[in-house]
Image: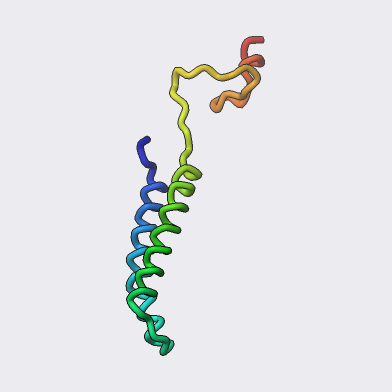
Length: 92
């Protein structure tokens, strides 16, 4: 499946989200005065990566817009994109 512009944007967003989370999460913990062990940090990073790994394919599949080939036959009773009439109406 070839990726559309929106799907590529979702992938870029996910990569940027993970990178920013890895940097900003410990920084915000430090600013708030809470201690953060390496175990807690790596747990948070793994959770963020897993969440993105689960949600990204859902977003990619949801943003896929199928295209119709020019020689594809329309099912009976469906409208043609160009005329707005159904095939049955064109034959009459």
